[in-house]
Image 1 (tube, one colour):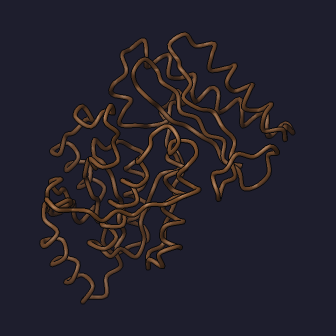
Image 2 (image 1 turned 90 degrees about the vertical axis):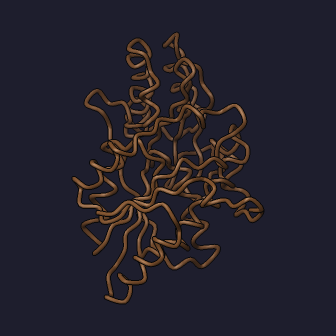
Image 3 (image 1 turned 180 degrees about the vertical axis):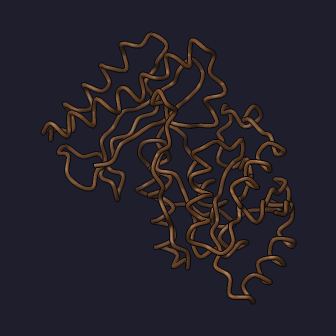
Length: 279
């Protein structure tokens, strides 16, 4: 497995693979990899001849007061992890490699990016769409793999590839959870022991919401209010949002019908965590 840092190096390797007729799977990440990322790498390995993992903490998707500087990084650990799962290439560029001094071209989107995380993190999805678009052009993957935990991101990227006629199949993979239910996240490392215990309110609320739907609840408002009330029983939790939206447009809905997404973002102390379930 190779670790490369420049676009030129990646393109050279990709050309060789393409000439040999190899299929390519891409797993875009911001590093500090965990079993959730591992499930994406494994899925990519099953369907493609070659697997590329990008490790890049993308500065343009972070807001002014967000955790860019403190976001966890450990390339040596990530490299061992990728190698153990059979990845073929890690692309780990410097921000200056991805965004040169006069960089001024961005990929923006309306509608899907104006709710949920897009509403509370202005400009976030412009950064996501721009960097993913760049990665697709650099790596030219046949398939790209994203986790369902970032459900809005997955929907946005699928929509972007359709709108821009990108020749890549987007594959969504299920949420991977800790044994106690907490969704795997690089940001879980920010939590103190007390906060880690408190963070279980997210998955507990998700499971409660799923049961309500299974038991016949169809009123989105009632579901959301019940989920908010559950979260508010945890003193360390502060709700950013809990919403039920159309699974394709990300717009709020009144009745729960397929496809729908029930998503939340909750602060545990200073750490913002997300979770969701799909109908």
